Length: 476
Image 1 (tube, rainbow, N blue to C red):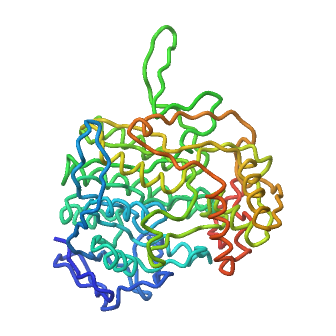
Image 2 (tube, helix red, strand yellow):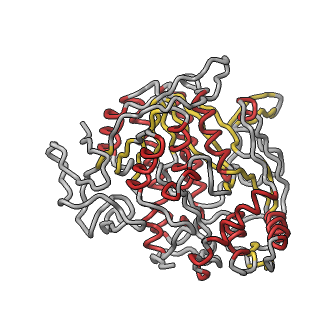
């Protein structure tokens, strides 16, 4: 059974009474904003350490009962009946989308547990990056949430690629739904060098496989809500359907998975995930929803705006920053907006407030046993050049001198193309989109101006080339 630790601000790790598990040396588990940890040469990115410790298969749990404030308004199911709170495991709950989702679900009355190895913080440390916003340790975040709302969120610190840890976590928490954000999410990161490409594929594919086996072994009725990406589809010269396409060939008709044209080792890992999930739904009767998400922008949700300790991360660098967020920071510090190539690349976008809403809708309306659903999770489509124009006009209204430059495209992609995606399924379930507005852009720009002293301008220009990725480990 997983060890349960009190949710105090200063925690210690203790051993699990298993012969093949070794304990951490005694130390505080209150992590700084940049985790003081390192990785062994064999699994450099895999296992979490503190204070240069040797590898260990230890993990920790912050556990407390959820207390309802009686103010939740759960979404409605298809039948119109109010949805009763469930136990939801959010893998990757310390990250950009995961943190906002965990708080949102907790606020809506779900019993929530976060599973995370905190490696995203390590990436910042390794690459010399930092969030625009100062982000508190996960322990401080959860303490703040409890003090504000009376609600507790359990914390399991460990790596889902270690199946022993994941199986202990499943048996301990017994989730009704698993929201899986716990993957390396950056295409540029996966293209830095061979080691990062290998890590991305191993971490993402093996982690998801372990989740599938854990569901089969310990909680077969658990609903998997998996974060995919619209990037799986590429940019075909036909409309992009939601996961499946009906085709007629040589007089015969069939409905088949929509063709995939991934454009990085990261996107390829997502394609592999989708195939593995689809297979296990068919073979084992697992119920799963694949949320092919567009590019997310924004920083605040109702919950993360409640206190500065709950503030979400805001990436603006060329590795982890998304287009609109990057442009707003560039405008705030007087750096020209960096449009890659011609700027005609069209992508699907959504506000982070819609990310959390979509996940809640998927949980409240679960897939049937054996069903592999695919929802295209976005609200609008924009060309990169259009986003630059929108930010330029909004910046000028605020007195900012905003310029745009075209930089050589580091990616291998079409810079002008047809792009038309379908996204009706989540709308049919009740999605109420937050469309990109002048007020939202103004808010992002003001937010960026507020924290502009934290911007490292050396991290703005792209430094990773799709064509020049090599074998030698590269330092950015």
